Amino acid sequence: MTLLHLSFYSAFTLSSLGLAFHRTHLISALLCLESMMLSMYIALSTWPVENQATSFTLMPVLMLTFSACEAGTGLAMLVASTRTHGSDHLHNLNLLQC
Image (cartoon, rainbow, N blue to C red; front, side, top):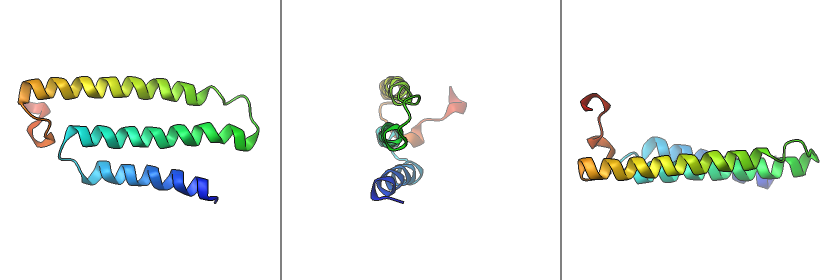
């Protein structure tokens, strides 16, 4: 395992651990999701270069598109929950009360 692969795996693992253990604010959960998507994007961008495969060069662009859609949806949820509940604390959000 190269140092490049180790950095991608560690960035993804630390982001998922941050998402699992620091669930107080919605913005911190969104930042952890974005860092997971960023590490996956960089890994997918370097993979075709390492394997000299030109057929997988479109995958990072598609993933970046879905990541932008996920970020926009997350920010819209953040704004909506802040307007209705007054804060972005995750313990205030309960789907059973909707």
